[in-house]
Image (cartoon, rainbow, N blue to C red; front, side, top):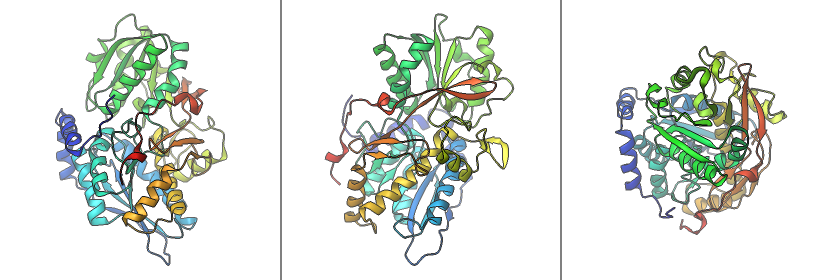
Length: 439
């Protein structure tokens, strides 16, 4: 792969192509008409000026399901941090801005955080097309930008020195880790169904390469626009001699996607391996999903309690207000995005550690240099309340964290973990080194 950096002009051009593809343009209009006021979470009173952290959230657009829970987790982590004395003795404020899951709006949000809100750091962005568009602007403005995205764009080395992903493992590492189990248990001939944008392309490229390396083959590739609302016509492209379908889908149509998948194949369905993205925010017991019984799903953090038996996981679940089934304690029908949202929690605690160990005090170039070089020097995060998903290894040259992955099976309308990968299973040769880039 080319190691050339992505410029902001190129990123916006690519993002514009996606945004103009179909409904994303409509979402942009919705964003303008549904302008969301800033939501400032006030910190506990303290003798020193608060540390201000910008939280870029997908409150609207195709990422809204994730955005709502990301915001809930961010506020829960903020409460804990301030209860424990803040960061370096300073209270912490989170300033939230909605980017509408829109790349152009994402760039504007970064500029607003720096020039208007004057935040110390920005974090939280999820959808990869927004990250790819906004990260170059963060680099130009020289503000640390810590994303919770999964995309390979950070670890690729193509962004800039101000962008980090310290809270969740990237897609390349995820599929590298789980592929051997898939080939051993489900077969070697796969059809991949994926969203047709950067995140989905990571799945297409890295799982296909890993499958071939393990002696398998790709029977067919089925890209679907992430804003699609009807899916049956795509399923006709799945060859009959497919051993298993590898599926990952995002956006507001995920429930329709999985329902139509079952309706199309019925009892003659191939084996199924999906990423939980296809079912994030969706109750596994929803009528019409019975066909999923016995199928397998990747999870970064198991939704159902009891699969990760640590006090840290239970404390985190209680703090966020999630019940044993992965839903809100206040509304059992409100299913969380449990597998992804822990990354928000863990990223905030990485910021806390980096500030305290670096001596960062204010938005000066010298203090940002101390923060970034200190964070690049981290090598691991131990399992703890700060990192409830599990221990992690951090690669400072790639600005990317690596953790355990889980494979779960649908049993009695619940997810039960059947395999946990080792951290080493997901490691790959690095393609970049951000520490060689100027600050």
